[in-house]
Length: 178
Length: 178
Image 1 (cartoon, one colour):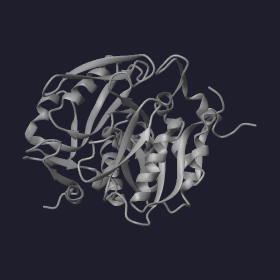
Image 2 (spheres, chains in turn cyan, purple; image 1 turned 180 degrees about the vertical axis):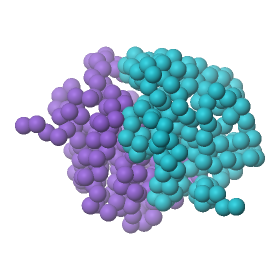
Image 3 (tube, rainbow over the protein chains, first blue to last red; image 1 turned 45 degrees about the vertical axis):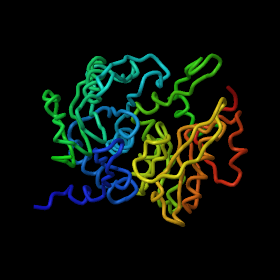
Image 4 (cartoon, rainbow over the protein chains, first blue to last red; image 1 turned 90 degrees about the horizontal axis):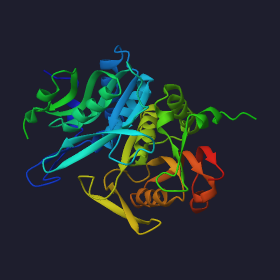
């Protein structure tokens, strides 16, 4: 069976031992520089979510911005950046999340979302799901209704989806093993 | 005279004393969350550059990604991220540039651009022009032909344009004073 995502998978570059030994990094820059593959990615997302009456897309810096912004423009909806601490200039709320070693945090502007707005969260990659869980909490604290979580790549073997059972999770390409 | 960019200017929030005392930060997140303003921004860029036969858009993380990616999708061209050191996984070239205090550097993948490709550089903000000059050097080292530099905001009083005389510089909104 040929899946519509098979040629997109071919346009992702596998970089062994990045950022550290034993990890295969899935490099999306080879997809982005290919205008056909990039356009197709956004169209797949668009077709999947065009009927969801999305009000705004929320994405986490930096790679998340690439897909979230292009899709927001395609869907003709607003775009909300979620950023590392102290990058957003106005009043924010913050959510901490666990890393392999230590903690990190994400922030969103307090006035980014109106209560009841329908929010689609877009990111390039679903790994263990830590950053997307923190992002969901930020959106929900502001009263946003999360209508979907969309990823280009899902590292299925890390089982991030198991931590996102309350949500409608969609990914274009899955990797079942490292 | 009402300029087409006047209502876009109104959708930018002015945040005093960010990131430090005496600076008025021009916050684009209020523009991005407004679907009409965001769409209009991308359409203004699109109309300005649609006849330039652009092959690829190059943008610097993180805010540059937001405009560069949406415009690349709109123009149906490839997108190339320029990033801070050690973020891009494959072989890169690096360019240092001067900050107010100290230095920073940017990287691009060596295989991002083919010799002779027509490149549009997109960023949210033209200030003194340090990052965009470094970006131009990276593109030219790879043999790219820079057909334009496009910014949402130009802080004209910083005279960044004076350092970019070899290029076709376009900005949607100008601030003539702090």
